[in-house]
Length: 328
Image (cartoon, rainbow, N blue to C red; front, side, top):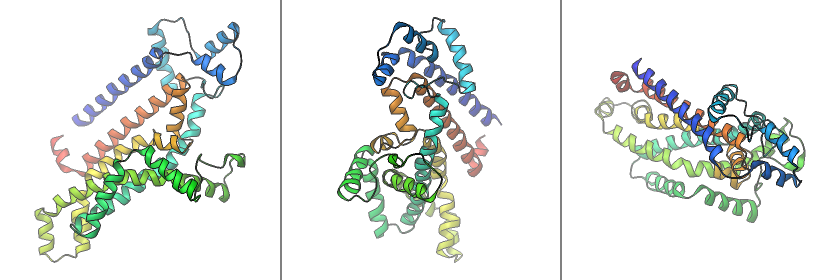
């Protein structure tokens, strides 16, 4: 119970700090979002029109800062951030609700896939230490993982989208096909557009899972209970799964729980390179367009998801590792 209380205190204090920074940061940024919006619309702005837009978007208010801060907390609890400047007159909540499924479908699936494949390959690599698999896979994927996301994305885009046109080179679907519908043609279209960015995310993130699982399992294999299992004559498969892998997977499980929070933020650079309509690409659009309401909502969503993932990771560690329960 004391451990849970400490974690909840950490969550509350961190969330308060994040919301406060989220409130102050856009108000300290230079630029004129109204002028940016009118420039995109290629229209002239009059004094009365400008005043109407400022009132609608909640800009240039004459309220004192502390009153704005209190009002902002009310908006946070209602998740009501007004209209988006970039996608005016769309509501911020509706804009984000459109982008989230794309990010969850791409980054969520690839995160699970990278975790499963990396953990399995790491376990096999440690079990057959010094073999061909152990000598090739970890170094290769570590090198690939050290490369910048955008560089690998551009390389795949050029090779498999231009030189060998095996996959679409941008967007999450065929934008010339009109409105999306739930049929097999649309699903296959979405999958084909997600193929290249998904491959880039898996290849650049799987190395960490492999290396963590491999190194942890090598240490576990030298434990006394594994030696005892071998002395009992248990099969290699049973020792690997029930004794070694089961105990070595804990760091990966903790890391996986934490990575779930970063799924919401999306693979920003990958989404940007492939013009994928997810949260990461949306965040770039909000920053470049000085869309303060949309930026605030996205930062708050990413912060909350990250904090929740930290709590989940802590709970997973508490349940799976008896040593943490003893210290609590």
